[in-house]
Image (cartoon, rainbow, N blue to C red; front, side, top):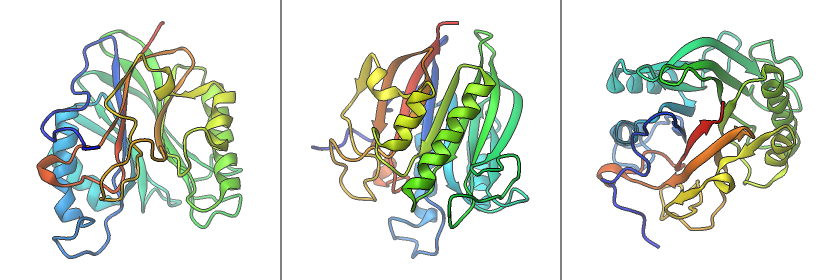
Length: 276
């Protein structure tokens, strides 16, 4: 099955009271020939075109190296406020984070948690992970509706199912303790319905796709890796929401602006509002 036209946004701008949440693993920059599909210099403008045309309220990114974050913030302009933090002890290195539409939301609080037994210790590792993993959050006030909610971006461990499960359980506890409506966006490194997704559901943080009133487009897999996307493929990236959310629409975007894949991952969208 063919992907939709590249010049048509999957979701596009969303009016209040709904909030457009989007997650995209940027794919970390590695040394490639400039014409290689994985070269950041080739993909950068496609990422910018994707973000500006979709106009999310809250964008979560993963695998953002400092140069990539700088590229995006300079090209996207002042409308989007970055809350992006590296996984190192001093906040450097590969990052996850949020880009926030300042016209729609105001940052009330910023937080970072290590996905370890010591979440308040930046750069800490547990559960035999090879690298530190972390979550970056912001408490946001919707300037239009006054709703205050928590947005979290994260990236679970790539190698260990045990570590992913423990990290997901920690995320569930964090969301419960904050007691706010929440959206948690990630490259989960495991498919929807697997153990970490179930652990979060038990904590009241659920997959947006099956809750959506309408699925826009096909249920594509989210890791096409620069190849043709596949309907029914593994959905390892996702937008999860607390159970008080109403999900109006959800989608996996396989757009290629200018014929260029923005990343080896596909973006995932959810249009969300909270009853409160």
